[in-house]
Image 1 (cartoon, one colour):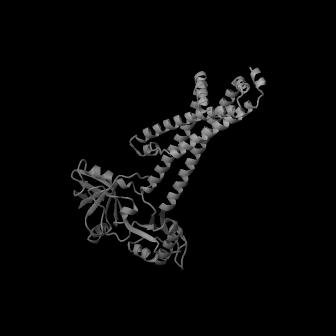
Image 2 (cartoon, one colour):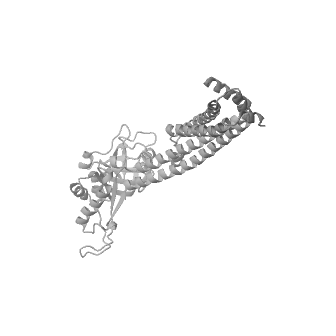
Image 3 (tube, helix red, strand yellow):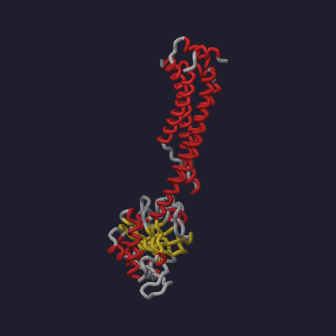
Length: 414
């Protein structure tokens, strides 16, 4: 039986080449469209989230703020500068905090290596800053360590971009770098990373030195910010509330006064980015589903016309003793084979295009968002499966109707 069905299918393709081609093209185009849409949507989602994570993961950056409410007889408008010892106070009182680091920032630090000079953002931090901000050392170098901070060493860690500008064609590790006229030894450079969220420029253009060294060199008594990471992201809101309570008790401000501190919440930012990315994927999925529906309707219309054109053939087969199930099976099998052929061709073309686009070098940030498709084989195979189901449905209804026609009436059909 299946051999006969395959022979009928091949014979029909030979006699109705244009119709078969258009059917396969419609199904293939629908598959190609939805797979590409969802692949580029998935790639865009990954780029958005990776760009956020490039600046830090699961952290709060806390800044001093100005009170907006009176508190225990104290007026509004009081500025609350933060200090490095606040970190110990937070860790002692909030066990849900995992890692911390101070940040002494200085914009416009003058860097000179030989005859090359530039200005950039400089930060004085603790060793945990590497984990908090995802600034990891490239092979052959290291980040700052506890001894650097304890001994106030003049060592520097460079972002990958500024390292290339200062030391073109030379390994920066071990080289001497003058920072505002003071000699420092470069101990490491950053592994390149993709970053869209940033403060005072990208980390690739930043110089990092020990917090104690920076405080001593520039006489800093207050920090630019405090960086805190909760142990568990699900406790973020609780930790944030406790930060206001602990620092509010020290600096005498209302713990409900959000203006008294500025907190850059990376956890909430990442949550919002995920929602935006999912929204984009849903939109692209709806567009793809509409394209898929058009392809399915086209397939159904073609199968309806096929059945009408072959009414006399059906009548002959019925007159020769063919059962209704044989007639139905023939057209369902034909519709299924056409749908699967078109779907697999479309999936193959989509996979080829995704691989080709993904191989394009990320020359800039825009290309990172565009040329970063992520192919999901489950989506692709699911699309082919849906189209195949549509093909079966499209073949069943007209075939069942044709199979119920009286053979004599079918033979009279023109």
